[in-house]
Length: 230
Image 1 (cartoon, rainbow, N blue to C red):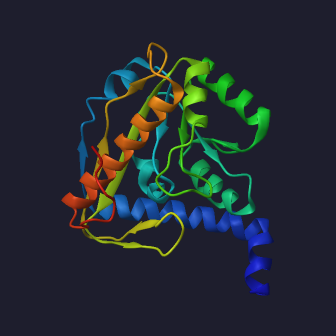
Image 2: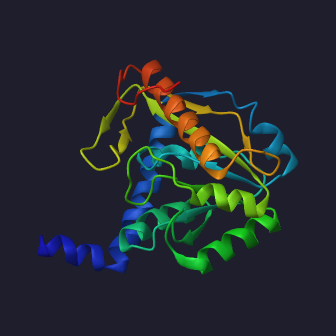
């Protein structure tokens, strides 16, 4: 345990781990046959260079590096915890930016940075149930970000036919090589013109992410890992 803690405290080890994660993502991308479903939803935003907030469950973070096809830069909102630096390093390896904080933590500085980037025309990637849960429950923070910046929210999830569900709080999914993968995008949620309350939009986002994840898991043979909701 002490050795593990020392490794986590090593900046060099965290950088190396981030690099290795990025290479693993590339391996999975190259060795699986991918189906990009409902890409027609984000395409107009990507082609027009419109900033959006991309949302995905914390447990489905890994392959989302390969789900972004926008012509403008994406910045990931990542926990300021030392473990978050590992993902941040992987993020940089793909040419993305990152912001320290979360959809519920990180203070006013993180929010100011997010709004500045969105108003500049860049996009943000957020795990609305991160960094510590509860699993599959979207926070209000992402809705408030979108309202302030007047941008739409893109729900997205993925699964593969070969993979491992970790026994972690988020049921983190690790895809394996030589299978078939699905990335599925949902209809964008436009909060700038919505007459609904923040809580109603939060529920809409949560439902969309749950259903997307249920659908890709079902189509990849992982039955009942995530329940579909009406």
